[in-house]
Every structure is written in C-alpha cells, then in structure tokens.
Length: 530
Figure 1 (cartoon, rainbow, N blue to C red):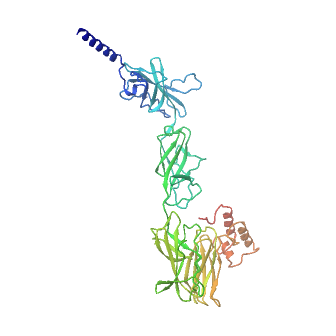
Figure 2: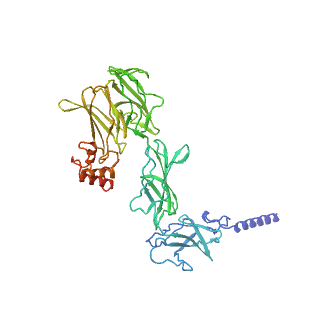
Figure 3: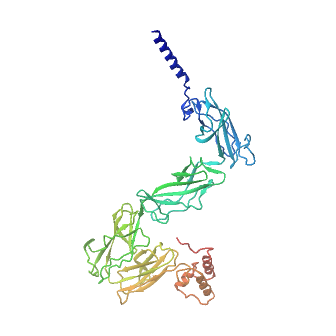
C-alpha cells in the first residue's frame, strides 16, 4: 500500500516537470515558423509618413495592438554616394529625387526575444521591409526615392462613333504632371467572342465592344502612386483600369459603340419614266453611305391610279405617256446602323427629289410617284471640292413678261450626279440654275422645239477658277493678270469671267488677282473645304 502511494506521487512530480519545461506561448504575430514561442520573428510597423518633397521626416510611428514589441526610436538617413555610411538626416525637408532610408528600432517586451536576421521578416505600412539586428537590438528598414505622388489621372479622347476610325490623339488636363507616351499610341481593340483583336486601321461598328489602352509617363520629380499602385484613372470621366509602375502606367477602358442613326437616304441614277421605254431598276447611293439597296428585295415599279398603287409592271412593259407610276426600292442599313427612330424621322430623295419613307429599324423602303411625259430634260452635273456638299438644281419657266416660275427642284449628292426633269412643254423658254457651296452659280436657258427631250450636261466651278479646270492655282491668277493687261481678256459675260470676279463687284481687276494669289499662297483662303 505504501509503495503504491509513493508511485503515484512520483508520477505526478514527473508530469508537473514536463509542463513547467514548456515555453509560454506568444501571440500569433510573434511566433516564428518553427514555433519557438517567445522568439519574435515577424515585425510590423504602421503609420509612417513616407517622404514627400518639401516635408520634414516623420518620427512618430506605431505597431499593431497585441504584439510583444514596442518602438524605440526612428532614424532617417539620406543616400550619399561619397560617404562610407549614409549620414543621418536630421534637419531640413525632403528633396525631390533624393533617396532616403527609414530605420525603426524596436524593443522586445519582457519575456520575449528577437529572432536572428536570417529568419526575421517585416513590413512598414504593409510593404516589405528589411529586418536587421545587432546584439539585443533589432530594426526594420525601408528605402524610398522621394517623389511627388500622382494618385489620380484623367485623360480625354474621342469615343467610338460608328463609321469612324479609332482616335489616336488624347489630351490630359492643363498643368498635369504626366503626359501621353509619344511612341506608343493609344491601342484600340475589338472585344468579340471572348477574344481581343487590334483594330487600329478599321472603322467602329455600332453595337460592338471596344477596349482602349493608352500609356502615360510622369514628368521628372513625380511618380504614379505607390510604384504604380493606388492610382485611380478616368477616360472622359469614365472609371478606367490602371497598371504599370512608378514612372509609367497604362490605362484601359471599355466602350460599347452606339448604334449609328441614319436620318436621310438618297437614291441616285434612276432613269425616270419616259414614254415607250421600259422600267429602270439600276440605281446607286452616295459614296460612303451607311446603307445600300436590299440584295433580296429588288426595286419595283407599279401602276399608280387614283392615289394608290396597283399592278406591278413587268421588266419589259413600256411606260405610257400621261400615266402615273410608283417606284419603290428597299434599303438595308450597314452593320451597326439603323434608320432613324425605328424607321421614323427619316427623310429621303430620289434623284434629289423628295420621296416617301416606310419601314423600321434596319430595313426601310423609299418610293416616289411619277407621271410619264414625253418631254424631259436630263443630264449630268459636274462640280468640285467637298463631295458631301449638296448641289441644288432649280428649273424655272420664263413667262412672256420676263418673270420666272418654279417648275421643279432637285438636291443632288456627289461631284458627279445625274438629274432629270419631266413634264416640259414645247416652245416654252426654261432656265436651269445650278449652285453649290464655294462654287459660282451657273445658269442655262433652253427651249424644246422639235424634239421631245433634251440632254444638258452642266458644270460649275469653284470661286476663283478662271480657267474652269476645277482647281484654283497659279494658272488662274495668271489668267486674271493677262485679262487686266488685256492680253488676252476673259470674254464678256463668260462663266470664266464670273469665276474670276472673286470680289463680286462685277469687274475683274487687280483686286481679284491679289485675292486669288493670297488663296494660292495660303495667306488668305477664298474658302475652306469642309
């Protein structure tokens, strides 16, 4: 019985000795990977103000709550290539471009000790730092290059527009401390079916998604955020993604190109009804138009009586004089475009004459009625300069009293366009007036005498084009100079003389010569294209 009590007592003593031999556990932040308990191997310093040009060093830092070490003191040193050891920075303010190192010395709480430098790690403000020790001292250090920090950037550029090419010209706010990369132009990419494809030389399509990437650099003395991080960006005020490093970043933004709206449609080159001729089904649209004739719905001609259309004409059925006909053609918009507000609010013309529109979305039809007459005027109008400027034709009849009465009017597209006016009377005097922006208006007079039709090709020339070749150059001011010298003169009442009279005073003299000369030498243009 006595031996049993002694055995239990010895076991208890042995168990107690095991527990007392175990170290006291440290906090999770202070325990190294080997689990040595009271050895601190990870150090965290927070609230250090990093160097900013013009500011003084920060000596007040802190450590997280619950750790088993405290801050002893803070020391700053300034990089000096000529010194064996960087000198302590005690006075003055930080200078842009200089390099500084912060040393934060730490003290272990009672019952704890620091791990050696080979196993210790640490951070300052969450960024990796170097841990060093000497004897029973430990310090955490991090080196900074002192720059002004740019924490936000703003860029502007033209966003995707259907039918336009990507914009490669961007701008930044006045006074910004960063600029666009002069070598790497903005990169535009099409995002489709999970793939990203460069589309620098293509045109935008409505409804498709595009990404733009542009590159920015800082001016000397500045840096983007924390080595490229913690920087916000906008493109045209829209939040953008930022990547990169301290002196160079790239900014990305995604756009959905809006659907292009077509608000006017022009049908060209239709041969209007002529008695005895068969219907014309071949037409065209202006160059660069964002629509085209339907490939599955061919043009149609119908008999038109009592305000309504009836039977369709066959391809070989001739027109009859005095009868009315309706022409209808279907149009399809190009990819990324649609007609007006779901087909509404769209105007249309056929050969420059007003037409009716019907339909919706990406498909409409354009139609116009004609009364077939044997007497008509037709031809081609040739003009110059901007092909997007409209050409206006006005046909008037001239009364016996010398008054002019409007017969018909057409507005044409392009620098070469066909026209046709029907319903003319024989032995009646007519005047055709042709005009266009930056051109000299021209008039033609005629009568239908023995024939049922007349072909009149017309040509109008730019202001100052005394030679009527469609250009204004040295040959034109030479022609005016010779006219002033009367060797030779421009014919009285001629269109050439009208083009030479750029001052509009009814005369051709040295004032006109000087004006044309200044235009040719680009010191004072007579007009600008566009």
